[in-house]
Image (cartoon, rainbow, N blue to C red; front, side, top):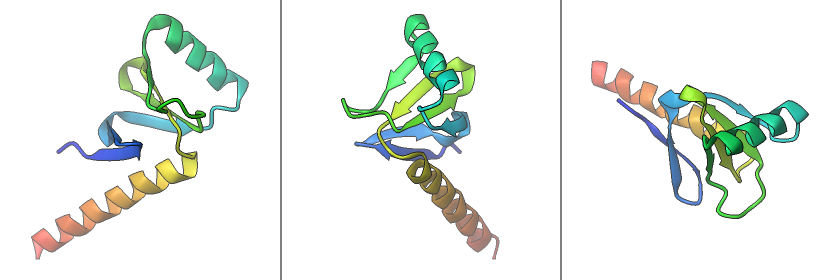
Length: 92
């Protein structure tokens, strides 16, 4: 079952499709963003705000978020925990 995670401003992403969450400050990530923009595989979910996290998705897509990388991680992690807790309660 697909789990959607809020990445800010009402934007959701399928957690199964996310390969990495990285900071946009490093030069290789900036090049990755530029290349994705040129190729048309960039998804900008910042709502006009500063990019603070870059999500690398399957099939080479790049997703920009205005949330901090730590915040995105916590949202993914809390969703995984709550799903595991639900699975355990269903087993009982």
